[in-house]
Length: 146
Image 1 (cartoon, rainbow, N blue to C red):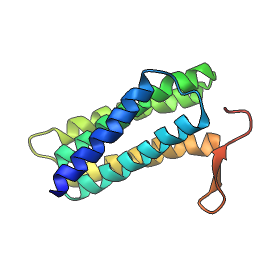
Image 2: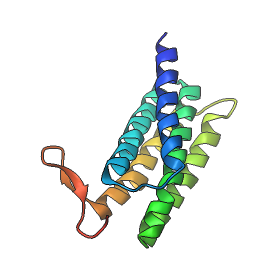
Image 3: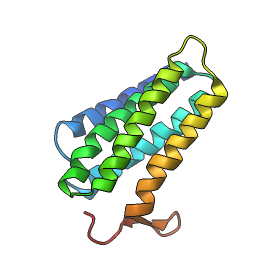
Image 4: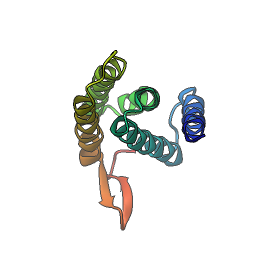
């Protein structure tokens, strides 16, 4: 039952991301929704890898990949080459992680390290450049980004 709920949740997130991907990110609300989807997928990825649920982890990777593909035009339009580079690096990391998770025998420790590295080096790098605030005051873009 738990697996069904997780799969259903992932499908809802993937569907909403697919709907957003058909257009472009036009508002802060759409961007925030995509970032929340990333946070959920990244958390789900780490949890799934930690519990050796590799098929579930690969679904989270697919969600993150789709979200990153949606983000590329957003940052390209703003001429933020460093953000586009971070996204491309993130996609490369996701592809490598997906390959690792799809292997006949998965090295769980290596997969956990790759998932953690993805979050820190990809999400963390972009947040450091373009976001300010904290959990108490809330997060927002730095001046002039959106």
